[in-house]
Image (cartoon, rainbow, N blue to C red; front, side, top):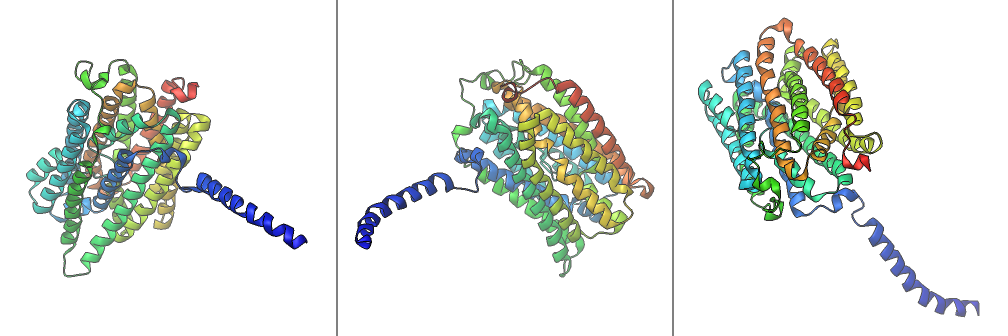
Length: 447
């Protein structure tokens, strides 16, 4: 009898239980590995993540071999430093021109132009040894000697992303956006170093191996332009928004927020100037001069360095939710700068690499928090201009440093000095930033 009673109950209950389990599974485990902040992103947002990955992969690719290539084709260390300075100055001018017109002329159009300039720069660098034409290509085109963002791309993409996410999700989305770039830079550095080293084992000369990497950089510029053509009109600023109509009438789109943007720009310029003393290209060259490290090994070192920095960005969003954006920026940046000061004091390669990796593991926590904070404390209709102006300030600061680094690297006894200058200035930046902005809170912290 018991068996007869249980059979009908199982026929009725089993489909219901199965349905509940499927519903529960669908509701709570669909896309389990994707954070909630990313699930709400639309097609254009995911496409912007892809363009960032492509671009930063190209930047990482060339950053490890660029100084080797330029020295290999006959430039001195001082000429190389001058070229990189002029390159970053040119990137600054191009960025300012394109970002301040992006809302009026079209974000997608400006991004495509930037990508084509990137492709052109890579092509000219690959085909000429003439210093004059290299300066022209580097100044007009887009080349990243540091592996970091240059040109108009980041500012326009940040403004677009800020329109489609909530205030509370913004920092987390920017953290994942930063991680995407860090992983791409790391992978690019690994591929650039490995590829050039592998080509040198064939009949190719070292310079030809480096040139192949530069050509690939130009090709990726073309790929980037094609990807930007797929961005829809939904990413553009609506004509009804003030930012699209009054970009030039109010100081390049800044009116209400000009005081905040001016202070942030000045501080970001100091931070970038300091960082320019230890850009990835020169840091890689320092390891070569100090310890004789080959490009393939350098690619591995900076692969893991960028991976660690990207992962740290995710932790930054959680710390910011608890302690606030400014406190997170400062309290994570200070220890990283102390570690930066310690790198040249290490007596051997292993310890120098360990300190460098420890520094990278916390050095980029201020990146998504800085970007999110800038977007939060300016008016929504001024975000593109604010991102462009602060980005130009950073590029301007970073553009000046390589000129001094080239001089210091030309003298073997002075190759450690860039680390000391960078660390000291960055600590000063942290202290002033905290003093000036700790009381200026973004909307999500006021709530």
